[in-house]
Length: 410
Image (cartoon, rainbow, N blue to C red; front, side, top):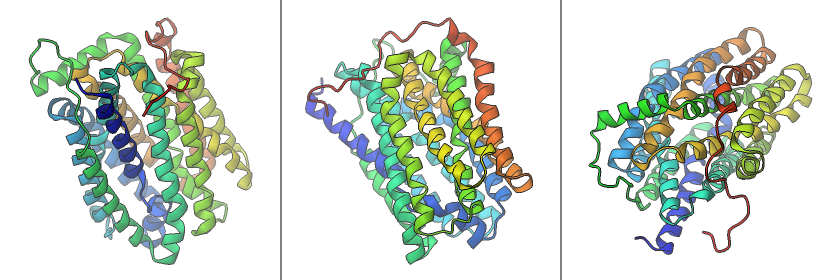
């Protein structure tokens, strides 16, 4: 049985992993790099993003099963390594074919990391009897994701203006390789199988799908949270076009106006456990998409730079969905299939975004940002209408999320 120091070390390494994975200095300027420096239209960029997401859809569950069978920390490390290579290719994008090659390798990287970290976190906490703290610590991890993006956004614009955008991309590739080394240092908790032997790879995927399809509330959470997350995350595609549309040039102001959005995401993730603990998981999963849709409609209808005020609201509420929904899923799925089932939610997010990304690019190029923001609101509301009913009669989680600080925690 591992000691408390061993488990605390795991949490510290996970925190470092989450921050470094998202600390990419090219984040605030990548769309500018492709559309202005390299001459791509926004429709072409979002079409490539859509194909990336198709790759993610195809790979999410198979790579989740890889993490369950051969190790979550190894899967995370391999994903971070592939991310570094794909970012390096991205720096030399001169044609749609090169862009697509970068994005396809990126999809492999993304799916190797997706779900594996959340499954590893839950198993780490469960070994020390702290699984009730999952939402709070997962929220802290999501906040570190956002802080990594936020710091990178704050620095990325000035660095790009001082040197050039391609330099920020090279630094991002190096950061990804450092992230892989951190992942390799994470201790792998043993999976609780009882006396059962390890399942064959393909059979584990089949059983995971069977378990989700047979459990109405589990299926509803995966679908509702996945579609709503896609709708609200898709707003990120529109932030840089929004700033350019409002005559904000690339530089310090361009970066500074994006930083509050990542701060909002960080706050939302930190408060996710409190929201779920005080209101219940099911109620939170109903209210969050409605609040996000209202923010998207405000963005669509408010003229000028004043619409910017709605952006932090959309980002804040959207960032609560992942810690809350994955906590619900973790408590209903065994360790041997945990990463596989968690990857199904990622698959839903990617499937919806694969359709939304090129659509939003087309809407923006053809009719303007107002129509694109309205589409995000419509998808969030549709998620509630289509998948909310099974949750209305479901029981709450057996273990409520911990919302108060724990003395002596890592």
